Image (cartoon, helix red, strand yellow):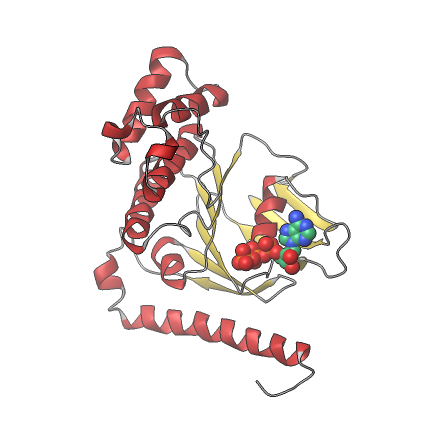
Length: 267
Ligand SMILES: Nc1ncnc2c1ncn2[C@@H]1O[C@H](COP(=O)(O)OP(=O)(O)OP(=O)(O)O)[C@@H](O)[C@H]1O
């Protein structure tokens, strides 16, 4: 049985002529970490909206365990690049709120679990700070802790580390892998990224999208065993081969798209 499935899905936003996504078919397996890379505007975020049930498809079928996805649900947590924390709540209260909302725990238990999550993301001493008093990287760590506090089986992540600097990005990637590995039930992660190295470091498979309108150009299996060591990974000739393959797929598609737009004019 397919877990999370998009079948011949197209999306045309109201008022738009050009589809954002066209004839997109993709199966995401339970417990896998799937990354999506593709040129800007190819419909990656739109696909998150479709899977989250925030945007209805124009045609095609989106299912979770063979049930159509028609609305957002507690089984799918969405993490955006812009933290989306409540600015009027402290870091700790943001997480406590998420736990209470999910109905998993309340009172002292919710507080203890929130403190534990803040410890895991290295922010115990910032628990009483408000988002406005923290750096972007810290806010994103709280956002990830809060997302994991919900303990959803599926995480839809739209460039969650796009707005943080390189050092924090590395830290957040490791943190995400740690939380993913340590969760009781294996979570399914669908992560959109512009960063090929991030996709290769984190994912089990990488879906390369065509330029808009988006559909899957190729699925790349990432065969490196876990836990992965960044330092060794980048020295592996197979890593370089996969990286070059993805780069050339993206470049070729972008060049083809430009030729179409330019009517074949030289670029
Ligand atoms: N809410 C919306 N209403 C109308 N059109 C939209 C909306 N959201 C996205 N689009 C259009 O759909 C297409 C795909 O956009 P989308 O944001 O999904 O691409 P993306 O691959 O995530 O881009 P990026 O990598 O730049 O974030 C674009 O042409 C965009 O203008």
